[in-house]
Image (cartoon, rainbow, N blue to C red):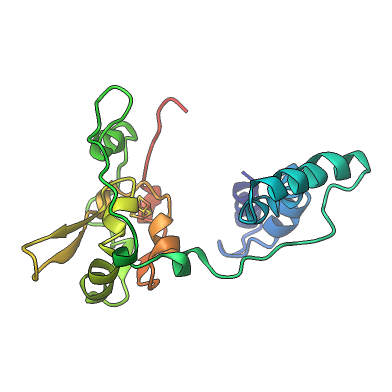
Length: 205
Ligand code: SF4
């Protein structure tokens, strides 16, 4: 909403669409910014163990606000990005997931259908690969093709026979969660916003 208001104001003033100078200031003045600052260390504390995290989150989100301090005076930083934490498949146990039962759990494509995801036909691809050889050469060989499992919309599929697989990208199913952009181990997948605002259209939200 803040970005839309900044865009509307910029357009009204006849400025280019990419000049959203009002947005950062509006975000920093919003309740959302204050709330995010208060919770900035939450995930990092839990990486140090549940006991430490429970105590420190209590201090940061209960005690300090009582003392009038909403922004903890310390910041924990990540040591390495998420994509660099993926472990080779050979070092990990193989997980056999039960099939969806259609009552509590559902297959991915049924859920994509419920999201009413839609993209204009013939729009430019919004999911591309920097190097088309890497999915098979690295992701499949070393990590057992994680994009075929972490994508909630079944966009990525390895097709073909063993030894001659290729990665098929069913971009029309994308629900724009951006996981692939963040999680791909070699950062080879490029996600950009689709043309025309396509994507999920949850009717009842
Ligand atoms: S953005 Fe999300 S839904 Fe879209 S392809 Fe990537 S992981 Fe799948």
